Image (cartoon, rainbow, N blue to C red; front, side, top):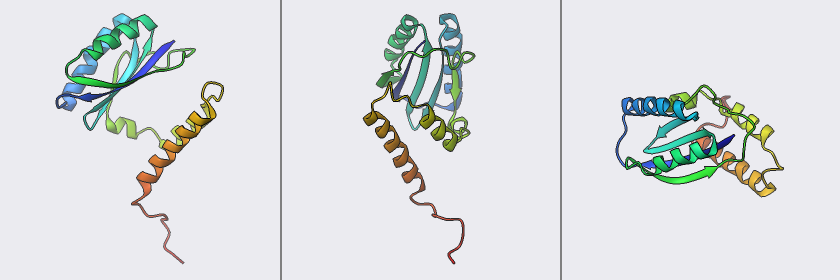
Length: 151
């Protein structure tokens, strides 16, 4: 199964109702194209994951790149995957609160357990781990180091 993820910068403001309408429209179109995925938006930036037949996804990505409402900043083609991960999500909008519901510790453990060193070089694995650690350190830098009072 072919998949990609892209990041884009919004060229106009997007309200939650607009984002849901956009996802509904994409859901109907993607169902016809047999494409699945999700869309999220935070601080003027989109992240979208798409999976399906390569030609269909590439054609859709060309259409997306020509949409004047945003500018695609980065596209990452993912290694072929054995199956669809989001078989029921022709397009689902995930809000910031939806993403927050995903447990970071579970995601970290799952990522580390499944990181295939046959696909990714040791350097790439270390880079991914470094990014995770930087994200943790930034998040916790202004938070107390302990919930227990000093002895």
